[in-house]
Image (cartoon, rainbow, N blue to C red):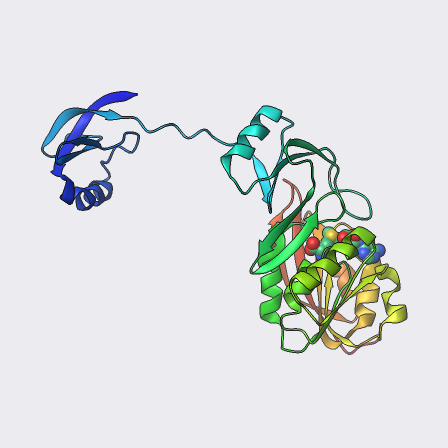
Length: 308
Ligand code: SAM
């Protein structure tokens, strides 16, 4: 559709400097496309501040707002159960192969969700990349959240070369694989066989040679792993970390670090529980907000020399 507007006329070869000038003056009318008249360009402007003339310009096609969604690899997860909007989302980017609607919240011991396919390929599996790491995931089979990507890098930045690490709730392996870059060895356990299967694939995909994946209940880790032998423990089971904290304290060496993730409503909610053990809290940070009342926090904890 064409629309008449004030326009600045310039020879084509002076087009780019003029465009920049009009942007910096804040007067370029971005709702309309520049017009061409022989050897001249006509830039639409919002006010007739310099030598201007009236000219008809083509309007830019209005960007249609996309429905709200989370993107994990090639899968878009929509918050609304709307097939029409899902088709629109699918068409918006060639990298999206499937649009899902989450039918259930994250739940159960495996922390998974139920999905329904709204558009595209009928799958819940995809591959995503995070800071150069490739991860095969299956959203229905095992937990994965791309929102912890920066947090994983924060932990890598705290590490010394050659550390012995234990990831007690490893899922498909994002922490274990990221930390293995610096670690000497990473023991990575999960109770969900589907998660451990994907973790094994991801270890191969990223050519890591220093991760031992384990199908294991974290409650029993201190029965088969050497206690007091780990430099760093990752505890990412934020909905219920308390029953497992004693095991983490037994596994870590005095002076070693535990990163305890917890869903909390107020700052310091877990301090008392942590300080009942021979532990010092070095820091407490908000990783991301989870709901209007809860946030995903991490406590960086040092094991002291005292006995349990
Ligand atoms: N660390 C992974 C990540 O960041 O993607 C996964 C975290 S997810 C919130 C928690 C994981 O703990 C799930 O994969 C679940 O299967 C596992 N899990 C739950 N209870 C467990 C237990 N008792 N022992 C070992 N793993 C457990």
